[in-house]
Image (cartoon, rainbow, N blue to C red; front, side):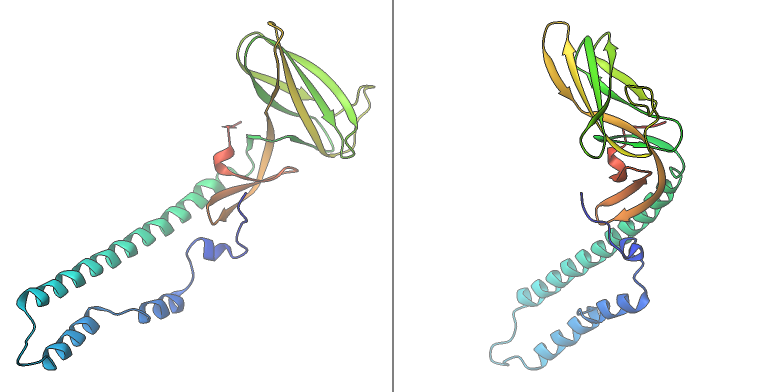
Length: 222
């Protein structure tokens, strides 16, 4: 996962007018090009003057470069606008719950947690919950009647029915098909969006107890 830049304003392209002015001063503009061409014409060899085709070629080259610069500026402006719009859209997810791929579960002080897996066919899906030390604290199963989504829920208790402390737990899922096949499954867990951040390669969601995930990882908003 790419690191999120510490300067969120830089990620939005809001770097300030001074930086923009310095960047513009570093390049040659249309006036500079015409000034150079005028000096070139003044100091050309009168016995071997510039050909018309060469003169027109320079003008065409400048027009091409100028057009590319204008296009680049337009694209940059569009990208900045998209970043801002993306952040505003992401802000609407704050406080909502989403399903993201994760091998971790975040258990709160109260209640449980849930998620789902995609079963490849009919059979039984067995879930194992382990604590931070890798010790198995709970195992339960769910039936898959056909290929597709199989939801699961954990109430936060161990095999003896005792409430476990809040924190992060590992979850694994394995499918045992009716035809005798077996396979490990990826788990999608439910997490609450606490905030959103803009990274160098897109929008990230900060999920309670789970960490950070790209918005493109979201399977569903629930």
